Image (cartoon, rainbow, N blue to C red; front, side, top):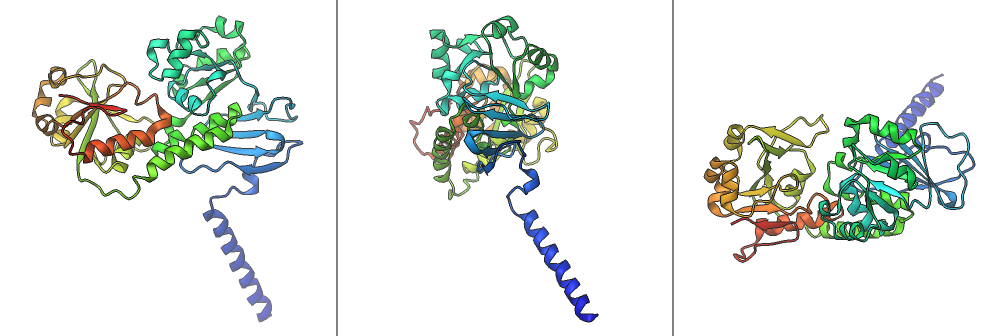
Amino acid sequence: MKRKLKFLVFAILMLTVAMMAGCGSGENSKDDIPEIDGLKYENKTELKYATQFQIYNYERGYSYIKIADGEDVLIVPEGEKEPENLDDDVVVLKQPLDKVYMAATSAMSLVNAVDGMDSIKFSSLEADGWYIREASDAMKRGSIKYAGKYNTPDYEMLMGEDCDLAVESTMILHNPEVKEKMEELGIKVVIERSSYETHPLGRTEWMKFYGAVLGKQKEAEEAFEREVAVMDKLADIENTGKTVAFFYINSSGGVVTRKSDDYVSKMISIAGGNYIFENLGDPEKKTSTVNMQMEEFYASAKDADYIFYNSSIVSEVNSIEELIDLSPVLADFKAVKDGNVWCTGKNLFQETDKLGSVINDMHTILTSDDENLNKLDYFFKVK
């Protein structure tokens, strides 16, 4: 009886250890892998930073993508058939996809990075709204057409020219009727959620999503590793102790800044700086910005060593006078007095594929003693 009891206790202990080991590993259990009739599972695409999607790869080039809190997408390679018995809500995309409507502006650079621009035929921005040269040039040539804003698309154009996929940002969630209308018209819709990634390279790693969708996996892997290499060079840098305020002034005179756990705040940290706000914003909310009255902002940020003025939404500021015109109290800020004011270029938030390079620019600003340093790839000095 004692031997049986000892054996039972031992068996329970071993089972517990096995279960704990399984929970602690980063691998998906067998139950997590989508089962597709007639297809043999091969592997899962390795993701180093991204958390908002997973890619499961099957024989003959099929891929199944799970987007967190979003769609499940099945990629069917050219010449292959759609598997049977799929759930009704699975978005089936048949390659080649060559008439894509790009309504998620931050994703255009990711498509460009994987050499997929030939797949884009429609844009939610006009040519002068793009700060990605390849996109702007394609629109000027006419190979990409303006098809209306994301919330007011030109349904007639998209239908008449056989749009095969609409890539939307999470902004479309505020206009669900647009997504529903597109689906009624037979246009496949996928909402990309790279904006929900908390690590800068998590956003950049969404190029692997577009690599899978467009059949450019190899190009995506190579492009991503180039940005990882840029980031790796900053891995051992010491914190400078310098504080940074990142913000812009809206039309009402209020301040729009970033949450403390936002990816921009993390870029500043990786670059060797400290974001001026330590606990700003609700980490449970998906929004990345925080609106503040100038009085509140002044009390917390006036002693910041550097100002990074965000021009992605509003106009660039080209002089200290222009900055102070937006709010006279900015003249009292330490960064203004010390001449440490930088403005972002319009390209910063569109070039999601280059966030490692953006961080490198931030690091240069925080550490350089070069008095003649006035312009970098993503920032310029405000004098």
